[in-house]
Image 1: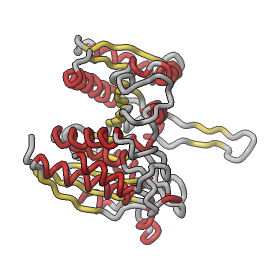
Image 2: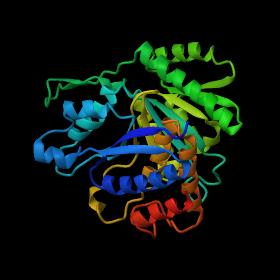
Image 3: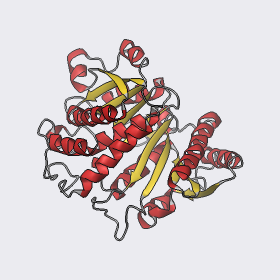
Image 4: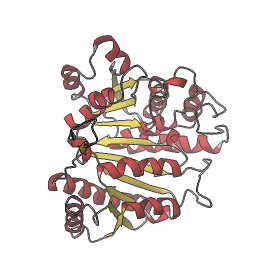
Amino acid sequence: MGKANHKIAVIPGDGIGPEVVREGLKVLEVACKAEGVSYEIATFDIGGERFLRTGETLPDSVLEEIKKFDAIYFGAIGHPDVPPGVLERGILLKLRFALDLFVNLRPVKLYLGVDCPLKGKTPDDIDFVVVRENTEDVYALDGTAFQPNTENEVAIQPAIYTRRGTERIIRYAFELALKRSRERGKPAKVTLVDKANVMTVGHGLWRRVFAEVAKKFKDVETEELYVDAAAMEFVLHPERFQVVVTTNLFGDILTDLGAAIQGGIGIAPSGNIHPGKVSMFEPVHGSAPTIAGKGLACPLAAILTVALMMEHLGEAKVAQRIESAVAEALQTGKIQSLEAGKMGLSTQEVGDLVASFV
């Protein structure tokens, strides 16, 4: 593609969000300059501080403005003075549902120079991606409690799965598997993770749709795993996975396990995607308010998130420059740990190191 002009909405957010986003934008500037790619950014004041000042999370007027951009680069959300759930539902979930960001994309990749908690595993063993359905399941409906705060209390938390929602996420996974196969020279494979032996209706739908879509992708190997078995295999045999597709709830859980086996959330990027439309990209970690402003946060997840964003925007060369720069920086040994406060470098110094390799 190249030479395109991309409009990026930047939401630094709370806590360490502004610090890590600053380093991501620094690396983005160097990579885009090297490839001759132009872009525009606009920064939006959305997060806990705004809520405390105005009582607003994400006003509809701001949402309409954000819809005019090609991508959203998000830092972190969460403020110690705001009750849990207010910002998450009022900002993240509102963006997810309003923009129909039905794909949550979570790469799980071990880089040289990163300590892996799994004995004997190398970067060749851990390089897959989890495709999490992002708009249905228990997240799409409110629960109900009967006779609350009594000994007879009953809580109901329903889940919803639609054929449309299930089919489009599974199809995305198969298409991604073919793309990764071409790029890596490996056979394409998609693993469905569910609990169809217990959740026979909802996950039964997933099984049927998976089989239907698989018939249209003859060159893609398939397998089906129950979520408990999949969690065990993430740890014992991560090399068996290429593309994992799963429900919203199971994806929420498994992707954090994936982050752990790749070295921690300090290096875990994510994308909330609607192919061909405005999509949102954010590091997996939270706002970590206790270390905010101290230069202790690892910015690598935020930097790799920029790579994921630029790949989505069709700028594969920019994305590759950024990811390769992260890989080279890690191999220098100068980044002693991915854990906050133990890197041996400040947040800014890590960003400078990565930028020097772009």
